[in-house]
Structures are given as structure tokens and as C-alpha cells.
Picture 1 (tube, one colour):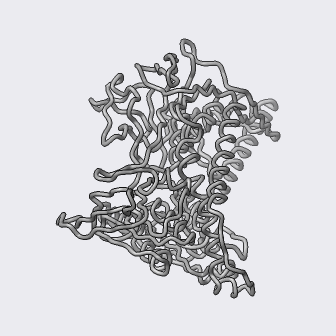
Picture 2: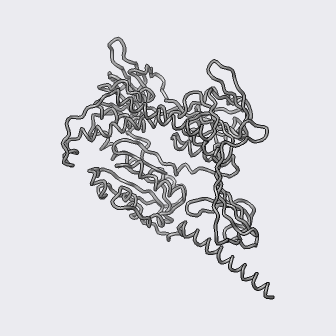
Picture 3: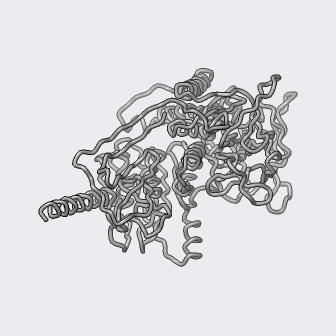
Length: 590
């Protein structure tokens, strides 16, 4: 779907603002430097690019016309089958395809498995269904929590197969929605395995079928990732499993070891303990949850780990894991991560391998364009352009999502895909990865955006500035207390000299929803001096973030808020209009 928005202006000095953010203008150097290079303007959070101005004034008519045009999948560039071909129909590929059609690009997407990729079929979507169950089970199982509301609930139980069906049904529903959205916009879904065979050329082949060659002006690789299984681990899909198997919930073991205490491991510990399992974490590093801000991690451990049927071994490797068979349990051999000396042998009912994910980049034909992967990842620059073995850019070839390893999150893949489409549509765009939030959907939730405190201190030391920390507690929030969910903390890391937001970390009820005010502020470059004046409804959880920003002490003055900047621009345009009309009137009189 292509959309265009235009502002009708005087024919003497037109400005056209397009949906891609581009603008051409004859505005004077108040906003543009004396150069022909594009510049960026931001009004009300929107980014507009402009070029060198002339001395002519801009005339704005009293009536502003806004128009939008909607079309289907457009005609391809001359000499190509498509403007854009995307290999992989996960969340990243899907987001890129929709944005490409909006830009008027004739688009095809190649998928050899099922539309939706890991996230929809074997990741974030079905796992959230299981976590929704675990959250309700925890409430029903907490007699103290229920009594605090004056509620009396009988013993809670569950139907394992019905829980598993809930997860599968959700994945199916979302997958069908993605397929329908692609079809409704005219995106060609090419079923088969895609291979790059040369510059701007892709083959795709169904299993057992013949190859079909398609050409495209630009190609995006969006093939995602698969669960990473370390050496020495034997996965049978029954007693030694990955997240792919765990989401099917074929069993609920009495005792399960989870290897890895990152996002995946934490979320599954929440599910399994709510359904009655005992959990043991095996973590190679010296602390649990090593990827989180240390202060948030310690609080999360106190609430998510210590009170539950969870124990852990840190600083150890699981060098060998053998599935259960012939009446024998799963055996796990542990060694010290530093000395490599044997530490222990565990015998349990099941083991979940949650050691992260590996890029799915084999069989893509990268050798045909002289590209070598790095630990399996496809090397790219900040604009997602693929880099070959000589360090040079491969023309018209991009890679997004888990396959490039920049940030292995589904929404990051989608954002990267949209960024690439902006570029191939003629508008330069660089995605700020520090503005992309992440969340762990435990109960309570954990969310974050930007730098952790150690990362911020390291950056400050290198670049020579100070950082400050602000914190607020959920215990002071009316809505959280009404829900009896006062356990939680929000943490802000910022520069006191200019109010720049470096990072925000939240642990508490609906933390995954609350983080976006902070992530959008980072993305838009909003400073604390401005955002602390934002108004939040009362009583809501969003006031946790409101109080967080208000408690920060930034020394700089508040900058012009976007709405005011836009208002000033309109005032300037009106002034110039009156000046032009006055000059014309005086010319007629003379």
C-alpha cells in the first residue's frame, strides 16, 4: 500500500512533504545550512529531510490540503522481476515487505518453512501464551494474594494438553494473520528455499522441485536463527529439549535443568515452576541473569528465583548431557568454567537447553557474492548492507534480524527491515539500536532500553562526562498497590549536564509495556528537561516512569518541545507570507 501526503502551497515556492519524510523547499538558511546536502528537521517527533534553500520566501496558503493515495503492489523497476525480494518471512521479513508495498515497491517474499518464522511459530508468540497461563496460575496458587482481595479460591489445577493447545492456536492465528496481510497487499509469497546466485539474482526451490530464478533490484536476507546447542549435548526432543520442543509442552517434568539463565531460561522457569516443576539453573558465568543491569538482576533474583522451587549452579559448564533411556534419568556432567575441573553430575527428569540462538545462514549461496560469515553471522554495516570478504559492500544486498547478529530480537529485525526499505526507496536511514527496547515476560516482568549502569560508566569514562542515577519504586504507585503488586523498581541512567537519557531499566508489573515511553524518548532525542513535563493519567502504572523522570536532576535548560518548534515554523511562514503580500501591494501602488 503506497501512501502520499502533500501540503498545498504557493506555486512560487512549493514544499512537498511525502510519506517517506522527504521534503523539497526554498526555505531560507534559518533551517538549512548553506549546502546542497540533505538535512534533517524534526517536528512533533517526525523527521523531515530538506535541501539547500534559495533566498525566495515560502508562501503558505490559508488552506492546507492533505491527500493520501493507496495502491497495491506496484510495477517492478525496468529489467527486474521485482523491486525487492526478501528471503525469509519471519517478523523481520514481514515488516520489510509491508513497508516496501507502502513505498510502492513490487515485492516478493521467499519462505521455505512457514510464514512467521521463529517468533510466531517457535518463539515469542507461543511462549507468551504459556506465560499467560503461568501468570494466572501464580495468582490462583497464592492464597495470601487472593485473601488480600477478599477472594476465596479453591485449589487451582490445569489441563496440560489444553494449555499446549492454547499456545499452538495462538501461533496459528497470528501466522494466518501475517499471511492474509501479505496477500491482501499483493506481496508475492514464493514457497521454497531461497539462494543468492549472483548480484540481484535469487533462486528458490520447493522440496523435490525445480529451481526458479527471479531478479530484483534489491535483496534482503532475513532468515533468522535456530536454537544453539553446545557440543556434548545430545538433544532427543523428549527429555533433552530446546525451546522449540518446550513450547509444545508435551510433558511437565518433576525436575528439569535449564542450561542458561537469560531471557529464554528465565521465562521457561516461570512456566515450569507455575505448573509444578522443580527447576535447576546451570549458568556458565558467575552470576544469574548476566545480560541484565546488575541491580535489576539482583532484585529479580530475590523475587523470581529465591522464593520459588529453583536452585542453581553458577560458574560451571554442562560438558555432556545424555537423554533418559532404558529407565535411566537424564545425566548432566558439570565442570568448573575456569579450571575445567569436574564439579558434579546431575540426574534429572529433563533438561532444557537455553544457551541462546545461532544464525540460520547456511545454504544461502553467500559464496556466490564473495561473502564469508563470522561465527555464522552475515557481516553488515550500520545500514544493514552486506559486507564481502574483502571488506567491501555487496551492491543491493542487505541482511536484517538474527542472521546479522546486531540485536537478536523480533522487533529489532522488523525495525531493521523498515530501515532498509527507507534506503532502497531513496531516503538515507540509520537505525539507533540503543533505542530498541527488550523485555522478559516473567511475573513480574523485566524490561530495558539503552545502556546498563556498567556500560554507561565505561562510556562516560572514555568520553569524559558524568552520569547520574534516578530510581523510583512501584511501592509508591497507587495502581500497583491496588493490584497488590508493589514489588518493583524503575531505574534511569542519564547525563546530568545535558539531560541525555542513556538507559532505563524496569522490574515490576507490566514493565514490558512501560518501557516504550523511555525507548521513544531515546529514539527522538528527547531530553529529561522536556519529558519531565509530560502528563500521565492518574492512577496508572505509567506514573512510575513519570516520577522517574521528574526525580532526575539535569542542569541544562529545557529545549523547545517539538510542538513549539512546529508552531514557530508556522509563525515564520505566516510572517513571510505577509511580507510577500505587502511587497506585492506596494509594487502595485508604485
